[in-house]
Amino acid sequence: MKARIQDDLYQAVNGEWIEKAVIPEDRPTAGGFAELDENVEKILRGDFADFASGKKALPSKEVGEAVKLYSLYLDAKRRNEEGLKPLLPGLSKILSIHSVEDLNAHAKEFELEGITLPFSSGVTEDMKDATKHCFVLMGPSIILPDTTYYEEGNDTGKQLLALYSQSLAELLKLTPLSEAEQKLYLEDTLKFDALVAKQVKSQLEWANYVNNYNPKSLAEVAKDLAPFDFKGFLKQIYGDEAPETIVVFDPKAIENFSSYFSEENLPLYLHWAYTRYLVSGAKLCSESAHALATSFRRALLGVEKDPVLEKQAYQFSSQFFSDSIGMYYGAAYFGEEAKKDVVDMVKQIIETYKKRMARNSFLKEATREKAILKLSTIEIKMGYPDKIDPFYATLKVDPSLSLFENAQVLQRKLNQRNWDKLHKDVDRSEWGMPGHMVNACYNPSMNDITFPAAILQKPFYGLDQSREENLGGIGAVIGHEISHAFDNNGASFDETGSLANWWTPEDYSAFQSLTKKMIEEFDGIEYFGGKVNGELTVSENIADNGGMGVTLEIMSTIPHADYQAYFKNWAKVWCMKAKPQYIQYLLINDVHSPAGLRANMQPRNFAEWYRAFDVKEGDGMYLSPEKRVSIW
View 1 (cartoon, rainbow, N blue to C red):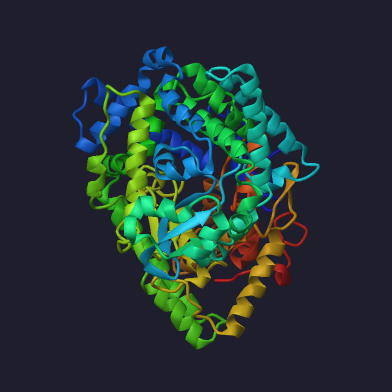
View 2: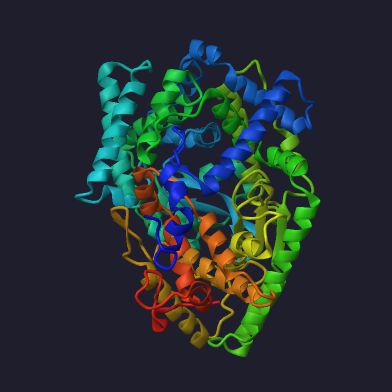
């Protein structure tokens, strides 16, 4: 029986489709974002096949290099003949390390070649001064997606580690290691991983972005990382221009570095680094090695099969040439009429947001003025960039090299480019997402919002959709991204994108009280055998709430506005059918609430919902007025 819309908006709108929908064998979900992504990929895969065959002329040299990599990936026969041979030089380099001094001497080379060091590092915008870059440091990654999987009594974690061990054991059989060595390397990998998992941040801790900013002197960090020579590592990269301040994103992991890395347990680290390199590289070797290397991910997400070869080739090429492909997609498939229409919508939403801020009931005038200033300086990045960074013209593919060797060359250049940013000013024209990505984002360090061309299609947006439908779709998403400027993380950044306290203590306390209410609204909701973590998802829930609030205000300016169409399209954009394993994965790791709850929870906070469908007390979608939350 079809759900009543007053009881379950999501099921009433999407239930019939969800019941009939079939999830593709190579994906964990169907519908919504996944369906749009599949369609965009289908278009581009067709174009790549035509470029490769000469049926279509190449649109640029950069796309030409992407097609070379695509064609190289398609040569499965060559990769099957090579086996793991392309990995052997790197694996041998790891085997040549016999002391921490050896590792120190080769640290830069290891990082460039994709051999994982006992920490993670890189260059990004400095939160305190968004015009500059800083060098950041954190602990190494772990095998399972979150530290909670390692907790005592977590059966899912044990099962996943067992699956990982099985696939790794099979991969190790393909290496030159003896049977005894294979067993030892597997055991040591799990031991080292368990030590790291005790120290690194959980997904919940990472969700509080502001807490990443922990500047330390180079001397302090070098002391924490001893016996690894961190000063020497930076000198290898920067010579005499090494940074004197390091921003530690994960203080516990760095301060307790000696609990997982030391002279004594160097073998544990080396065996872990060996297997990490093996698993990563095997994906680019023979088809049998690829299947083994991806089997853990498939089990984790509930995916039945790897994509067909042509899909794999396109997806892999897109990893390195995403900016070039995004530029091509935007220019070829995104209309100027649509771009102008959506930009006008963004501007209207920002202006409406300013009016809402000006009459905000819990902020004092000084704080309201700062918030309005931040709104006035948000930069809009719509569709695709006007130009591509000249760096991408330097990325070249050499067909005489193996697929893995080409990936190494490309990754080296990308790593070096990242390091080279340290002493340069931040380029605010850079895009955080390519034009062919079905997504959108707000960057607190740039104070910009990005809407790739690929998301600007139905049900999110359509020139032939009604204004109300577009407001319930892309409009609410635009409002969502703007609201990230004022969520529990974004609220700590000013209009320049720098960390700054622009709040009065009373105003921030009032905001925190409302944030707490949003956490409570979602926390503990049972969903497909798990529970929603209100604290993990609060930033995205605040953004959804703000996006709905501002677009409903615009709806009030439309004569005889169709609120039912607005709410129905809001529900439609979150339509998703997913594998049970993937739903469980998202509940633990994703900062977004489950799609069904995103559709159903926020409407209950707004009076327009109750008027649109005559929702009354006793209906499933009713929430008593005192429990409703509206922040922005």
